[in-house]
Picture (tube, rainbow, N blue to C red):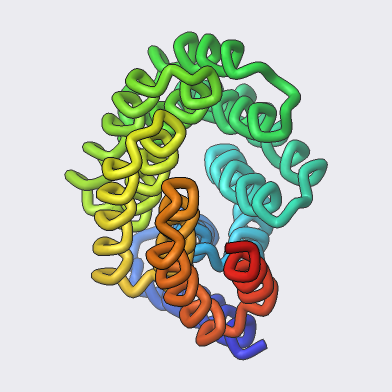
Length: 287
């Protein structure tokens, strides 16, 4: 509850800050107050989502989308819908997620922005891959078709490589999958998107684990955890330690697995995440 209250405080501060910025303008002309509000809310929502705070992210992104709609800004409506769709999907609200992605595609087409259309198609393809509604090979083909249109936005370029890596992982093309996610990682590390870089390493760990490269998976998870410590990403830390426990368990190193699970458990408990506490305790009992 306190976290949600804090999010509403953040929204209020963003709205006040944007109003103050707009009031400083002396010359008549285009007004950007609503757009500034929406952009700031979108940025904050994306940061919350990257840290696994999906409930908070949904509040911020819903408000960002509302403000973008007030301004009738097609680009912002599309971009907020993309991010909101991702969060809704993570919360298990898949129909709502696909509705937002469809809106993102429609608004991008109305705008005539081919790059935004292409990344919206890739967002939707990722959702269909994870839902089992589209084959991994079809997703690879979709990314290959759309990537040529994505040239200016480096985060979009990184995301397209991330999605291609996930699809190649499903096809058991592990070398190609890791190469794809490494391209995403290079962008995130160079541009300072550390939450995203941590997730890249997490994904690389899963690819290595599936390929039988146990030590490589552990090394990748250690890198993910190191980044999450730097940025105090509680969700990432707990997820990283639990994934490390899973890798150790598959390798038959049960003592190491339990130690990793208990580190994850302590973080989830300190964060008050009862669902993940229960899931982690179940893994410990199964050792």
